[in-house]
Image (cartoon, rainbow, N blue to C red; front, side):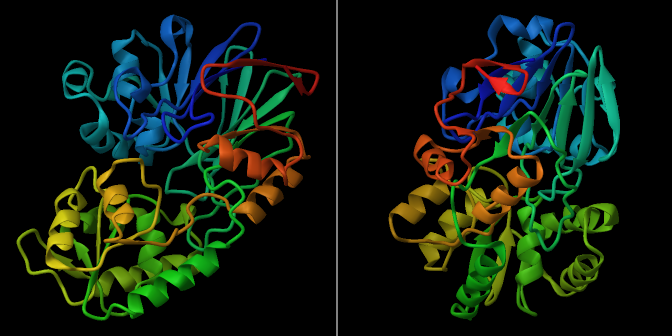
Length: 388
């Protein structure tokens, strides 16, 4: 099989991978790169758009789905496979991250969506596409693509050791395209959660925690103290996620239901609360946090950032100026998680996505079959378990 690296290799953002067999050509994810502009904002696909037979979306975060309207504008006219949760969340992501003119001409194409459930197996031509829960977000999945001779696993975004979301084990494979977002970070998710809880305790007069609406919001909700607030616009989305029981651990469901029941609704224009406040999104580029972050900064209200900060995003600028704190709440694998995933997959040839070259080099010291030299725009061939 041929592997086309259209985005997310040697960089964070615009994640997109195409797989080609003798008779079929599919695309896995089509994201944007926050903080970039022009062509660097979109995947590197070009004229090949016309030969893609099917698009598979792993979940609705912007770096995996944000270029959907762009892809349609470039001429893609095939089916779009996704889970029901991704279908429900993707339009809001496009509203924030798609080019407005493109979105007006090419809105979310509901009539071309083909739904599947995590765990389903799909077929396109001579390719079989298995799916499984990712542990990253409700409705999020990984893909295992086989042509009868080789199997390629594209993890998309995963979290093997989440205490909230269930992740199905990745199958053994010939090539693993691994979520390397954190490189070789050795600190576990549990340890980071304890750090965040301690930071919140140290700011008893209130603080702002920007967070993505889907995924990390539940991880943070689970570690909030008894008294905390959420932006009122988040409540419905949080309720829907908590109701997706098949994606969550039973103990987490009960904890999250209790937490949401006592959360205080905060509305735009209200005084900043004297307790932790969760508001989306996590970078300050969209949603309520786009106005809340500068408001908190001007008011001397402490801000804790907990995820990826694209260069020059509002969150990044505030942190680099020393006016915000940052503690990662893992929603991707740390070193122990990725080692476990790689070993259980049979220690195959491995590529890392969503990671800078420097961090990829560090991870390569631990995952010995990891290719650290590949970059967006390259095409590789998998033949008899070897990539070239």
